[in-house]
Image 1: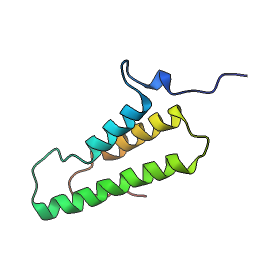
Image 2: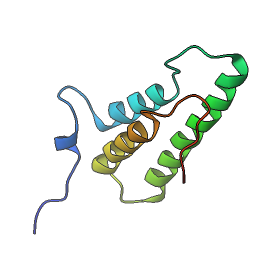
Image 3: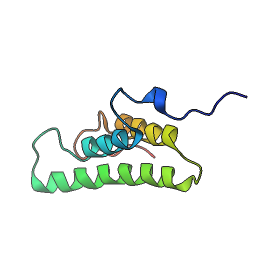
Image 4: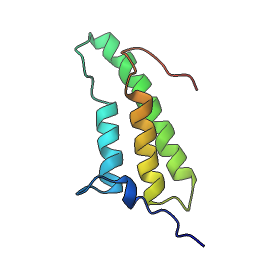
Length: 91
């Protein structure tokens, strides 16, 4: 029976699963362009929703480990990578 993935093969050298997720959260909640206060609030609400959804997915699995933590970081990065201010992804 093959070993279960532990996430180590998904992590850059010198990092950890926790660091990868926290970095993805920080990047998701940091605007890359200047915007008005009103636009930033809408943008942050949308981004925070994506962060909450990912954390809920991870926390809902009692057996989730490093691989799932890194997976959530990758999902969060993908969902927010090209999300313009004020845009909301489907789902």
